[in-house]
Length: 211
Image (cartoon, rainbow, N blue to C red):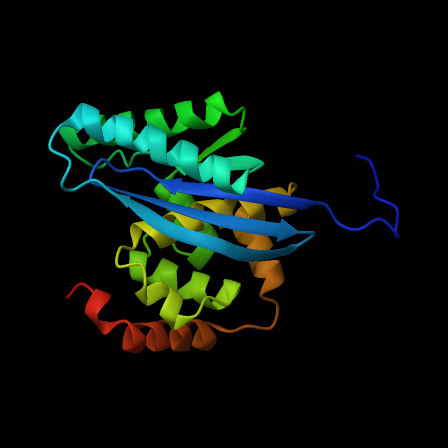
């Protein structure tokens, strides 16, 4: 592995994360400079009012291409369909994922796929964590404001950003899994801190918590 000279600035990378869906597709853009990561943007492609599945797929392709052209990502991290869902849902998610991947391929963006459990494990330390818990931990790790999160009414956006952050952790610590990398960054933090972070998120975003 080549060693970067001490006087050479760290290389900047832009990672696009996508959480596929045919009704709501989430995306998040992460800027990485050395070992430091920061959120650039996050949002959703809302297709709930688009009546035809093929029109939805076309919309996904166009909008993902637009995000790629706007932010020029170096890599795409995309969530794989969850195999616990029913066959019809799996088919729809697979189509949405395939179209997003096709858009990245058209722009020659390298693609990395992560299982939902793998992403949750990397961010929270628990593969069965909820979307809200993932959002809470991301908010603390990346310093995302409450106002920014409130401006995006769907947790699909934070799920997409989580895919990008999971990829960042995995590439930052290539000899370890992403969770080990996260734990190294969090030296000295306790489970009590995690619990406080979740409580703060829940209080600030009560309307987004599923009872």
